[in-house]
Length: 299
Length: 130
Image 1 (cartoon, each protein chain N blue to C red):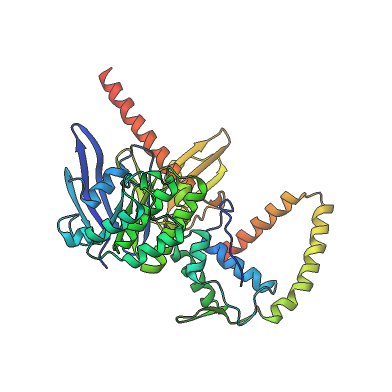
Image 2: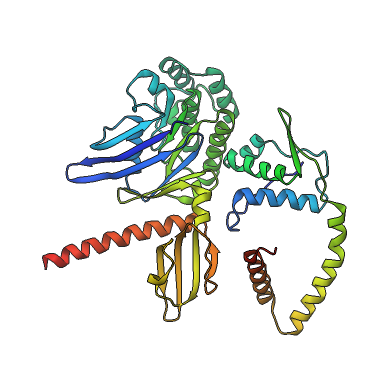
């Protein structure tokens, strides 16, 4: 099966600053991918590269087996909802549907009309007067009615209240159930994505920290607690993601391909949020360490 | 028909929660043979969760022989948890109650009992006994 996203050594540089670096990914089709990371991590850059709004400074990216935005056909296969779900403020809801029909050869007007009815939106209403939640739903409606194979959504629920957020994700998941569309959506909040994603990419400080099937990731990460122990003495197949020690106790978050056999450890499963936070903290520490060693060499 | 709910802070994955809720409904007699489970789309629309999660839960239930999918119609309960297993509930509960009594008399509070229970469960699991 063709990967929906296939990046190798992908990077984007603005002047001296890399917004995205050494990004190598292969995301299978039919998944709902959560792209998670703090603000400024490079999420929007990666998404813009995927939809062809940006050109890479390094490496390559393939989307659904093609190059992003290199033909009208390719454009038609990918639906994109940019950050803050932009709409045309002075156009009415009905105008948006008409515009969607003109601009997209595969536009399914019946689907769009049905969704607008479901949402109870007034077709004569100007989009600028809609609430944040309604605006997001209108943007999603247009993207879904375009009948894409891949939907790319940049922070779609960040600015919505909890109810609007839930409703947005409900509609998005219904579209996945109906059409089997692949989805990539970004958020700086793991909690938003926990229920909807089955594939995770953690991006911080311009680099991919970890990516993979959510269940596989959760199955191979464990929290170990036990009497204080030198982490260097762990078996070779256990990679430490995070470690903290008191004078008596060690708490480790490890990635391990096999089961934890040492009976001295109490082994606990971890949640998605713990996993994401551990990788984010690790990236932060590595960054501080390099900065310190630079300062050291200067002094 | 039953309605699913998800507990975000339980630490149990959403798909396992769905499986558990069907199993529990079977044990409690809320679901019996012939009953239909909510369609994947209904569950997705209600809980705003990934359809694959629901499919996975239903597949696991199917695999354990509790439900069967009829193409284009839905997923139906095929077996009620066997009467023999339910018959065993009574005596096991009595034994457990007397064990609880012993544990309390030995000075264990609820939390210690639960910790001991979980710990034993896990170590049996690790030995492949459970």
